[in-house]
Image (cartoon, rainbow, N blue to C red; front, side, top):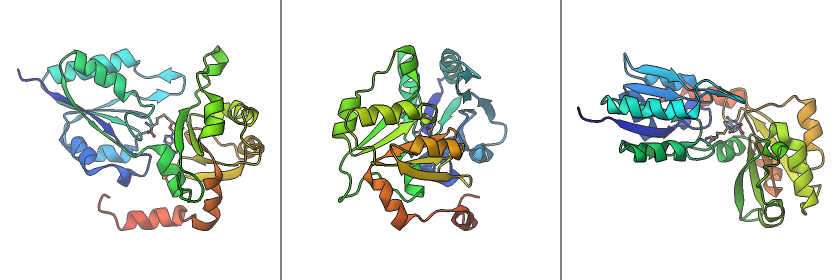
Length: 262
Ligand code: SAH
């Protein structure tokens, strides 16, 4: 039997229309779609009739399917000759384990493609009116996971390099860890008055944004009960939101009224 193929696809950050054309084709043509928790479920309505939809969701700290099971599933389905779309929130290679799954497929000689997606650390700020770079404010940008590993003594982040060398920093999975993030950045040289924002459920109708400074943002996040998924963004670019904030629930509805993809 001819082997199938696996497409590792970025579904985009939330707004279903932020998937790529190629990503949408992969959804439409798949025999099997294995999707993660943060994928907008609306995208699944474009699957062909009879396609098998498998939830591989990862609730923080809990895994519906553990990674090895997911790897095995992708390999098995492809070996049955099926087209498999592995759908992940944002970009598959940004804290999405796309690399690990690709390694496994390569090892097993399964054909695969990686279809990039729009990552939350760029898209959520953009919808909040914050460009991650700007000629006058930021010429470097870093994407960092702040997943609480320091509690196990596993903080591998080079805080000094981040605090002193990078203008804009997007922290993924950072909400539970805000105290540590702000504390380390200040300790390593970022001014306590550095602007900071948190964007929760970015690019969706539920998007919420709070802004403050490194020294105040944790308190504000508590007051507003901000939870994951959220991007913690640190840097002077946050100030631009005052001028170019454009998105609210109303504009979300407007955007989707004139929809190519309903
Ligand atoms: N591959 C994804 C990231 C997966 S890690 C990407 O490229 O975007 C999951 C983390 O991504 C969440 O904890 C949160 O920090 C961030 N995230 C994902 N979707 C988000 C959204 N709509 N708004 C804000 N943050 C989001």
